[in-house]
Image: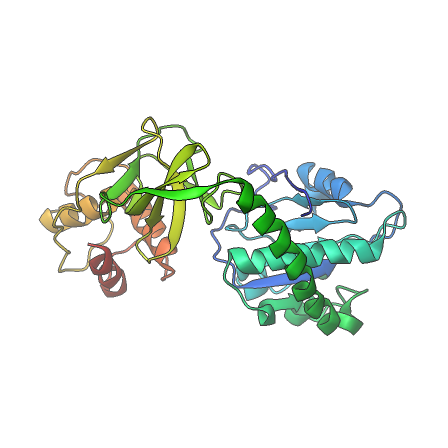
Length: 334
Ligand SMILES: [Zn+2]
């Protein structure tokens, strides 16, 4: 395990952190091209936290021979691939910079990056063919020290895997996981926590390494309640059937009754639409935590924002309008 230190670029540096939502499909490998002494991961973190020299370049992780700094959450894009504002490199890939500082051990930094790549492939259900050099997107000679042996780099990702698995099983052994009850199976558990940071959710039955958070009113479907060490968690699935784990603490979540019988809107709706059909859509979007406004049968700015958030979540065109494609997705969750 390599330590990952999270120091996210503040959102006020909009040119570095546009906060466009991203569902990563690729991992892009870079070299820093900075061989100076001291040009390690921590130095690159400070550089980004101070505005990145006005270059408008940003990426997700910098790896050196000792540690990893994370600069952006992996569900937001950075500007590192040189393939334009809408390029897949910039908008769909996680950027990793590998340090080449003269006072560091480059091969160790490469091994740490391989470990990180393996973890990200697992976290995002990606295959190794999705790991590409910066050159793939823009033709730039980067990662300059790895291009001639990029296939070996990828092979090494799986060698680091066996070590990682050992670490993982060693940590799971120390925390016992057992089923408490399945009586709430199929019911919805939702957040009743109003803090802006939300409630963490996890890919494993453990309170380590959250993969995201959800806000007040958002909820998922219970599969079972489990005991993890001394604490309880719900094993839940989201509307797409992906399984996650969240706390079962009663001050943070509540179990709601079964899903109401929603009515799916039968007409296209846009900003300015009014009437019952809008109300149907509001009820569904509110239930899933996308809509924060009143149930007033009126398609205002909060509805546009809610529909956009829903569209992003479903991976369809984000335009804030409830057209045929969006209504079809709505019918799947209603
Ligand atoms: Zn690069």
